[in-house]
Length: 437
Image 1 (cartoon, rainbow, N blue to C red):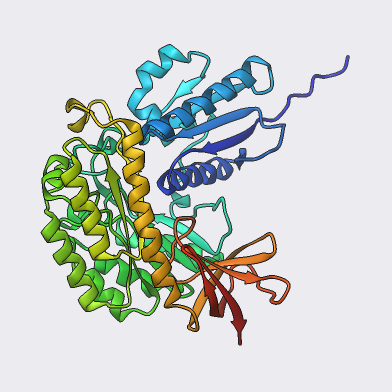
Image 2 (spheres, one colour):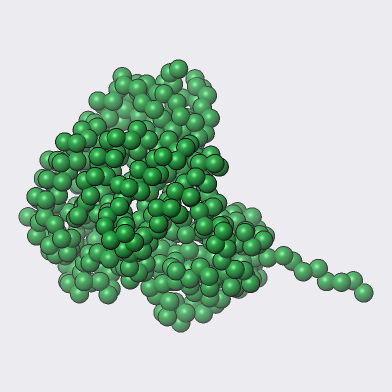
């Protein structure tokens, strides 16, 4: 009698949402593979029989995309294409009870801090020796580094504390160890991320120690760029800018979400600041580091934003001339403070306001980019796309900012290398240049 051959499980992790979710997926991937489990990230292979979906629950569009993805794989399960579907991440954390009722075909739902419970499903253990040794799901020359988890801020519009819990900093020692491991494996750029990087260290060390962390990371051999994201403006530690100025491998770049340019709306948002204080902060940062690229995000259509308040935000953008800007439309989130307010602005009007802000920013970005023509910049090559090698300057982060395009028919570049590029032309969001020796 012929013995039956058991098919070995193959796990595919699907990531929705932001870079913080991507880091969680990379940690999960590392732990699974460290336990001898065959696991991949967003593989196109047809032989993956277990799917783990790491969901996003930030705004309506992201939530719908996560739900659609769950339903896609539930359908695949019902057709016998996959055996099991597990769901984790922010959406699962926030709506676990509702999801279990609505989509019972999912084998299990997990929250944002349930990694050990996920591993138990595979009879695997959390391996502490793998902390800091995270497998990357993209090109290895850059890596996101999550310096803390959760958030203690009371922002009216935000559901992140409901999904991610309170702020927990990782120790400087653990982060340095991770950076050393990354550098040994070819990583040249660290992108520091958190729900609120400004708060870093207050829970562990009883004081803000973001500047100390950045100094320690900049001492790691092999790390050429360190880039700071998601710095909350209220209580921003200015010693961070001093360290940025002193250390050549800390990028002259700051991602600082300001969210609005009207003091009355900022009060409604519970941001703990005013438009005047925000402007003073940006001026202070630029006084210390004139050569800094500041990225911010704004929300259009928040409750309390009338025509007057929106015009204040327009004036704010025109006055501040941010090097980088993104605009979200307000998403009404249940169980948030703003969720109890009336959401009276139609979606079409929110989008029109967001588009108006971005049209202003396009001109600002175009003017700033024109000033770069004829100048030479150190560029990190990320990929080859079509007929161009595509890279970034220290003033640009991955996926969200300007790119430098180099004609591949004239120049050869290796992915992950730094090259010097003289800028020959520029549009609103792209630079074109020639590699020089």
